[in-house]
Amino acid sequence: MGDSTGDLTVLEQSAIAIISTSDKCVCPDLQLSKNEGTDVNTKVIRMEEERLDRRLLREAGGIIKAGGLVAFPTETVYGLGGDALNPASSRKIYAAKGRPSDNPLIVHIADMEALDAIVREVPENARKLAEAFWPGPLTMILYKSDRVPYETTGGLDTVAVRMPVHKVAREFIREAGGYVAAPSANRSGRPSPTVAKYVAEDLDGRIEMIIDGGDVEIGLESTIVDLTVPEPMILRPGYITKEMLEEVLGGVEEDCTLMRADSGQAPKAPGMKYRHYAPKGDLTIITGDVAAVIEYINEQLDKRRLAGIRTGVIGTDETIGCYHADVCKSAGSRAEESTVAKELYRILREFDDEAVEVIYSEAFDESGIGQAVMNRLLKAAGHKVIAVK
Ligand code: TXA
Ligand code: MG
Image (cartoon, rainbow, N blue to C red):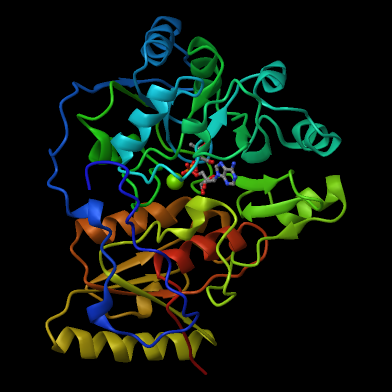
């Protein structure tokens, strides 16, 4: 898949499925040879939030103004930036990612004044949320103005807008002219990058520059809330939780597809229907009492290993020592679930690097940022969940 062919594997519709090693999901674009379609010399620069380099920021901004692409750090995940008001730039983003062109991009801004030009109006609720959570990991869906090309919004009359808090991101956006369209900086179907190394792995040779700002802080993409519907609705959970939004707005709804695949409905954020974040190995989530989960997973691991299959486990600091997998990874401590958010995508990528074929994961508490963790983990597993007693 060279560019936007739109044929990614769509999320399976079964909420609970029986383990099968033969129904692995490998997204078509992952089968590309590493250098296919790469012809740009990608310059990598290093920049900390504490040590902004104005000259390099201007150079990065100049690339965007000239219609090129620059990957940059944000507090959530790395973004792949292009000029949001230039249709050709948005087309380039889709091509570089191998992303279906009906999957709209988020427009990143650096100042509140920038918002007026790209939306039809700023409703009261948007002002309240901006005041509470911007700059920060919140994306709002609003009606777009004529200045935003349909190439950026995937043909929709609405636009997703976010003002990141990361200093490098904001200064870069300013130098780039104020409007940077940026999806996560991964090849379509792969986990979003939380370090620059993974951006390079996916996009080296396809984009003009990567700004390496070190590890991101949160590790999962922003919360998306739709303000074009009568009741504000969460389309993607993230660090800003339902409770936090409700404190500001009162009632907030949730897209019913977030945590289940059997609702019979399509997710309201077009990008959420794709089987994102999937490792190459076959991932299943096991829920239930901790001791029963460990016992069940170990039984399965033994069977798989006897069959010569390379196995992996995602556990926690408290449990990881109990498993007999070839590759065991702790996502952090249950006592502090934000660490799980930060480690999840790195772990999923590492299983690929280590050629793991079958992976079992413990489930995580769905409160707070845990809902976002489980939303991404369920997607990565194609909603394969087994409950044990
Ligand atoms: O944290 C983040 O949001 C990161 C960083 C780079 O800012 N960006 C990111 O972008 O995650 P992306 O493209 O990977 O995800 C954007 C999501 C997709 O699911 C897309 O379908 C949805 O936002 N989206 C964008 N515009 C939309 C719109 N007008 N209506 C509904 N969903 C929209
Ligand atoms: Mg993404």
